[in-house]
Image (cartoon, rainbow, N blue to C red; front, side, top):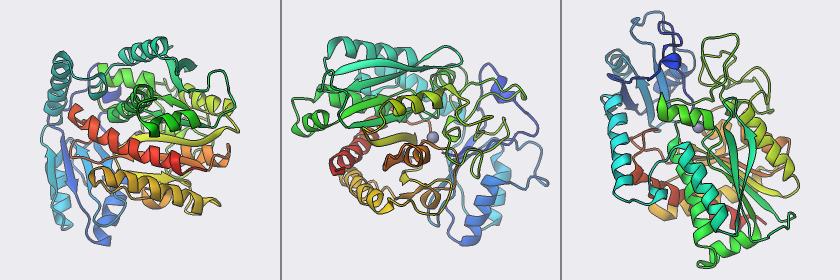
Length: 421
Ligand SMILES: [Zn+2]
């Protein structure tokens, strides 16, 4: 999801604080019912007219952006009374989803620790970067389907790691499907979804014919933590951190949005050239270790890759190219066919409806994203972004939701893979 943080008082304060604190922050939900309300929310999310706003309002963070009439919009703010008044004055009735975000963060942390202590499954709890790496290495040691390799190294010297799950042994000519999770650090249920899929492929091979068929047909390459530095920071310093942890030479604000750093209309509409923005594209395409790592593994698989899916949270949409233009891609009919099948499989699981279509139409216009690069430059027809289920918990999803959210998403991805010819 897009994130707009307005810093005109506390520039950089959150980014440099040892521990971000969200005491008193609220998460509001509002649903635009008229085009005037929708355009007001869109302008608020893009270029808020802050001149008459009280100085206390310095964070407006859209956890779910305004995209359509009747579609709920979730906004984090540190001064909700003013924002609530604004929304009321436009005829909208905001709901308070979280009245003190910090207390939700604290509660979730305790719940996760308790759940692990009580012996919950690894796949149904949240884990640190180190625990995830250990899990992958153990899997590689114990399961002949699995190989783990380093595809890049972050600025803070952490490995970006990909698991290859294949029954093809040394055969490196088979069709491949690449999945990546966690490009945005705070979207923890995305990381969990990649781990869920790795677990399903490795434990159900030879047990469930559909899984056996999918592993025999495709080599699965899965990167569960695409942004390790950001992810570690989201555990240790700021649970709501989104970008990587690149030091920006020209600014006190840290981080680049690596999902704006790909060479696909780089620097264009829907990305920012301001380092303090949460959609900062970075100084040049592929300036970031994380985007280079994904580019390089995909280049190494060129000619074999049938689908690439970037998994995010929590707009609840399945989106295809293009993000940067409303012009439809030449292969859109084929994309639409496969997304129809995928979204239907998701809905058949628990009834969750996933709207689908080009990102620029279904979500909002973005430049420099994975799916457009994968399609335009690498020629992979099925390059998608899957935004997981929207819940009232935003990015602070409880561990109890990992199983249902990952299960429905995985059903969609399996259906996609089965539908690809
Ligand atoms: Zn995201």
